Image (cartoon, rainbow, N blue to C red; front, side):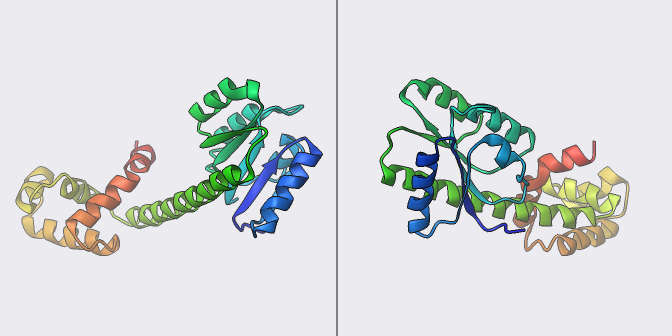
Length: 209
């Protein structure tokens, strides 16, 4: 499957869709064009990278309905809405639902290109961050329950002596667990460990309730 970063154009107007696709490809942007939301949903998967340029008014599933469906699918693809003059309140609502921007028809080409460049950069940043969190989670899953307990107290800033008392183990045992935690997580310092823990804290809560 081709998962290169791509501008996904979803627009029911053939002329608008074709001209936008030609404009983007003329500056080297990889694009895929869809005449309706259903055709996009039929090939969508979470590994897709890039952004979506989405017409807000379309027959069948409209732009906002597609956005809601993608939110339900936990999509992180940034969405730029293309709107008519009367659709601005809808576009504002769409941004409240997570869209990153909107452009009004008729739009200036450079304005849309700039917004697409911002969206593509945001997607790259989000995916790098997500990938990093997945690596951290994999490492944390290798910790034993006792090492996890020690890590939690380390992150809270507790000294070895206090951790030993809290867990009713010897200070020497704490030191051994502490060293293993740092080694398994490839943490260079306590500050580095805290940053990693904060990056995945929500996932840890969800996975260990």
